Image (cartoon, helix red, strand yellow):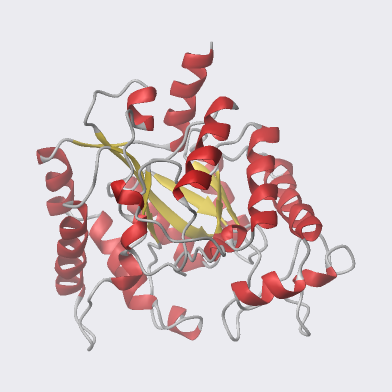
Amino acid sequence: MKVVFILGLALLNLSNAVFAQTYAEKLGYAKGSKVIILHVDDVGMSFESNQGAIDAIEKGVASSMSMMMPCPWISGILPYLTSHPMADAGLHLTLTSEWNAYRWGPLAGKKAVPGLVDNQGALWSSVEQVVSHATADEVAEEIKSQLSRSQMMGWQPTHLDSHMGTLFASPAFLSKYIELGINEKIPVMFPGGHNTLISKTGSGKLLSTEMATAIGQRLWDAGLPVLDDLHNFSYDFDYPKKQVDDATLQRVATNQYILSFQALQPGITMVIMHCTVADNHFEEITDSGSIRRGDWLAMQSPELEKYLDDNQIIVTTWRNLMEKRRQLVD
């Protein structure tokens, strides 16, 4: 599901903001370096989502994933994490349950967070419904519960991010998200730099330059790495209207990624995708299967890997960024 930022703040042209130094440079990368995290969302949502993420990382160029703790297939990713203790796996903090016939509820329990659940006992379907019904304290309770489950399962997440951008949907929610990362010393997905790419998407109203810069500085001062930008284009890629074979889908998806990467600016950019081994069964969950399968195929494309190498684009992980940040503090 495409990340949506709907804070009621003025949209400014962040790409025109002048930053003397990118967060990549602050971490020790050479001036002008383009550093990306190729990040797979929605792990734990389904078997197909889990397998897609694993393939994209083990057989392709993807470098990171994040897990949806309330979802039915979260236990299915544990064998992989157990055998890959240095994997880059964070939490896709989940406050919505958007599919019609495949749904999940809050980990904190309906009694603890009544404003987060609908009349089915599941999380609300849309970001707007969460904003209308839930309090910031309920949001804080639920995201802490999701972190607690990960830790109970024996996994300390490498970072935090937000399913459907819900935690960016109100200043109060955003505050709880930032506080959790700072208090737990876990990096958070937050575009605190020049924000060139994310300002060009159809993702709603962005943070003002002043607020984005201030929050980015706050995270940095707390000893956490900060993103310069977010790439959130894959849901807008132009795919064939009719069903095509995998070779064609891979070629189309790879070309779309390469074209979009031509606009990458220096700094650290998180590239959001949803690599999924989407099949006929998965189509019973969502009609976005072709897009997700395209992501999965593109990440395994030799042409994409060659493009990254030829253009000296550095692929990294949240784990690596946090280690670099710790070294600066030490």
